Length: 223
Image 1 (tube, rainbow, N blue to C red):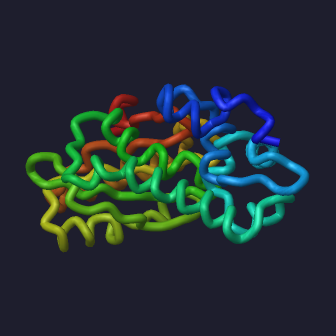
Image 2: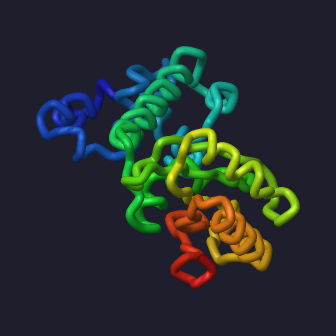
């Protein structure tokens, strides 16, 4: 049990004495959970939770029902975990909510990577920018496999006109994690570029999001 662990090695005491940055994922999760059960310490439960979700990778998207399926995790502990994860997500977005500026494909990736790299379906998203390249609106235009018949320029540029956007950046994710462009990706991009020229709203880039990787179709010469 955790009470049998020397005080200097207990997660709460270590955090107070050394700071949160020195704690392992298991120790941080143990602090969130607070207590163990009659048969297991909170550190043991934390270890099982992380093993069940393959570390933080899948825990990030865990539902209350999935968490409660783990022995030792009831309603209270499941809610504590979910609340902590949501706070982390909101804090990571704080800086992005203040008129984020798009200057490069890397800026696009930084803006959406954590939201999009774990999605299990393709999401086609548009960022609408003002004359200073600040994001004034973000909208998911459609969800599903990408092709030119589904991604209609009308839906993409309708919101740009409504928002008086000066330009747009399009992006979508590849659930496989590999952001290499397909023939459909290229065809959609060329069609949107041509429509943007006619309307007078420039398509600055089409960025494909993978797992911690991205590809800019502008850098590839298609925009």
